[in-house]
Amino acid sequence: MSARRALLLDAALELLGTEGWSGTSVRAICQSARLNPRYFYESFADLDDLVIALYDQLIDQLREQVTDAVDAADEHDRMRALVRATVEFIDADHRRGRVLYVEALGNEKLNRRRVETGFAIAGHVNAGGSGDPLRMITASILVGGFSELLLAWLNGLITVTRDQLVDTATALFSAMTDRAGTLPRC
Image 1 (cartoon, rainbow, N blue to C red):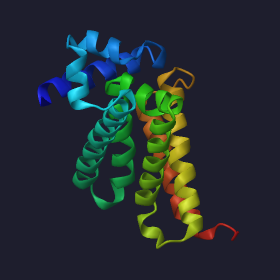
Image 2: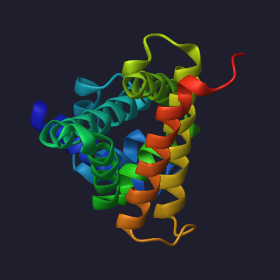
Image 3: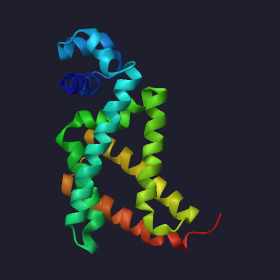
Image 4: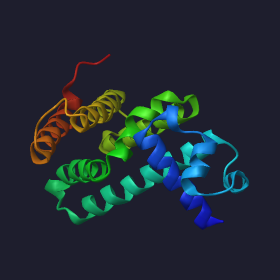
C-alpha cells in the first residue's frame, strides 16, 4: 500500500504543481498514477486528505533539508544556511513552490495547514525571543514575506540570481531579528 500511496502523492505533486486545482481531481490523480480509484481510497479519505498529506510531505522534506544545512553551518552562518536551503529546495522543483505557496491558498483545509505551518516556522525563527510578542510579529512578517518573495522569484517577477536572493533575504532576516527587541511596544 505504501508504494501506491507514493504513486498517488507523486501524481498529486505533478498535477497540483503544474495544472493547479483545475486539473486536480481524484480521477485525474488515479489516471496519472495508473491506479484504480479504490486504491486511492485505501490511502486517503478524499482529495483534501491527499493534498494535506502532500503538503506535509513537502514541509517535512524542506524541514529536513534546512535542518541538515543549519546543523552543518557554523553559528554565524546559520541564517544564511536556512535561507539558502529553502531557496534551493524550491528552486530544485518549482512544483513544490506552487503547491506550498499558490495552491495552498485555494483549499480551505490546506490553507489552514499553511497558516499553522507558517506560524510554527515563525516560532522557530523567534526561538531566541522568549515569548516576546513583538519578536513573534517580526518573525511572522519575515516568514510570510519570504514566502511571497520566493513565489515572485520563481515566477520571474524579481530577476536576481539565486545568490543575490539568498544574500538579500539573509541580510533582511538578520537585520529584522536583531532589531526586533528595539521595536516600539504595542
